[in-house]
Amino acid sequence: MAKDIVSYADFEKLDLRIGKILSVSDHPNANKLYVLEVDLNEDKPRIIVAGLRNQKHDVPPHTKVCGL
Image 1 (tube, rainbow, N blue to C red):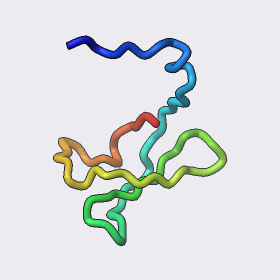
Image 2 (cartoon, rainbow, N blue to C red; image 1 turned 90 degrees about the vertical axis):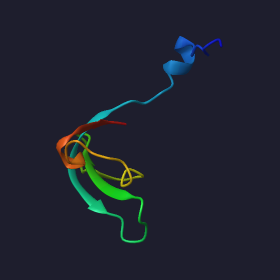
Image 3 (cartoon, rainbow, N blue to C red; image 1 turned 120 degrees about the horizontal axis):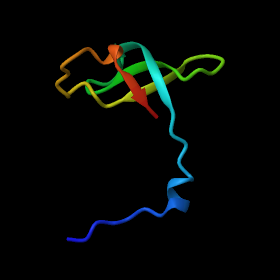
């Protein structure tokens, strides 16, 4: 099976960022979601919802650095 290759022009369109997870809490209305507060070195942290609650974590998610 041949792998699809992404062109540099398409890759260049992505806005990838690295951030530090400041806090993680359970989503109040969903059993499978976390609410994360992430520091992306902007004026204020971003709030991100992630479907990670059903995943096995070797370390708590709030101790990791995430890529956006």
